[in-house]
Amino acid sequence: MKVLPQGFVAACSVAWWLLTPAPAVAQRTVCTITVNSPDEQETFRRYLPEPGHRFVELVERGRPDWLASACRASVACDVLIISAHYDGGNNFFSDRIELNESLTVDELERASCSDSCPSLFSRLKEVYLFGCNTLNPEPQSGASAEIVRSLVREGHAPKEAQRQLRALNGAHGESSRDRMRQIFNEVPVIYGFASTAPLGPVAGATLNRYFRAAGAREIGQARPSSRLMDAFAAYGLTAAGGIGENTALAQARADMCQFADERLSTATKLAFVHELLQRHVGEARLQLDRIQRLTATLDETARRQPVVAQALEDIARDAPARTRVLDYARNAEPPVQVRLLGLARDVGWLSEPEHRDALAATLRQLQGRTALEISDVDLACTLNRDRRLDGAINRRVAPASLADDLPHAAVRACLGSSEDRARTLQALFGGDEDDVRIAQAYLRHRPIADEAELRAIASAIARMPPSVAQVLALDALARHYMSDRDALQELVHLFSRTPSWAVQAAVAGILIRADRRALSSVELVAVLSRDRRPAPDGADEMIDALIRTLQTP
Figure (cartoon, rainbow, N blue to C red):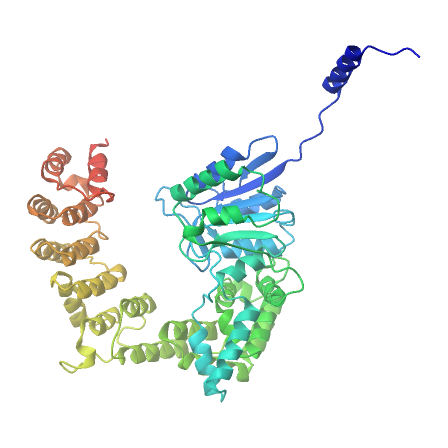
């Protein structure tokens, strides 16, 4: 047998290797939802190169149905990165003025539950949630104290009431953490933050250090990375897994999908609402957000559909459920009372006149409290947006009584009292910070429409001494579109003479929204440049923004 030279064998081996097609590189799809900062996804892109990774940005700017578009395109994600602020409830959002994209938890629930989006989450191995409280384990509804009081009123001992509450919360997944685990129910690893998350640039820099130290080999492996959590230890990054099928939260996910699954008809969903209302009222309370989002979709056309009308009729005739819910409402805090009364109207338990009378009773109860807060003023003005509750409260108040303070007056102003409105507006320039905040809350709902009145209040605020109260009062003015030349000129004079940068920034906030035709842009730029005070380090520079706006043709 002839033996080939060793060099010849080696050369043939190299030639064979060169001619043989390389094995296909397994490619992971990394989906990004960039609602706010791009820093996180840009860092992932830098360290997860092609051909092993394909990045797909799901957000299509200017298109509100971008998540549904991704579902229709049959995108299948191996890794999902969501970069957004999170309100701890139902919204992922941006703090960037130029962006109006957002993402609701409702949409994620629909994508998770509906057959219209079978592929998007089907092969997910890891989810990265770069937002505050995305994996917060605390119940988020605020219903705990109400439910305990309800159970005690029913005769349960306090300890037993607490035990039942824990069981309800555990069964319904009331925390942000549990909601994310239900949405991404079969995902092995979900990363998120139990409280405050780092801002985008900080998160991007932290990821950069992690990747430089550990490389990208841990990404997409469906195993929690202790190195990644150590890198974010200062911010409390945590990890959890989806709930799976045989866990305590499996029923909670099934309930969630009763609302979210697009394959179910409205009548079927209403039948499930009726089932909830027949359980302990605490269960309906924990699902109140979802119930109200469903009833909000019921316009007159939907209500006239025979199967929907029958489902609503079945609920309306359920007297025991009506009694339980309205009894619960009477003992709940006013904001929850209002929501439950709205539910009672939507399902036929209260007529429109009965609903109005019940809201008026809630407001009278509110007015009878010893101390009121900004949220109470917001509630009263919101309820009376259409003025149908004007006069719901007796305006006669004994001088120096508990109801004779400004918060009570602002609530009465929301309900149509002209005398209390005048008092609330005077508090805007009275110099007391707390009172100015109450007046601010009122003006968010009842802005000043009369130009002469706005001019007089602007003048009074301009005469205040430099203070936090003056800054707050100017911020309240900034919500108005000012066009009166005399009023604006007085604010320009205030800008020139005040020693306070904060006051100057607040004045700039008014001028940037005002009618530019009322003042000479050239002269105003000269004043702003000449008289401005030094800004604190890191301060938002409203004055620079105003100058740029004035100089733009």
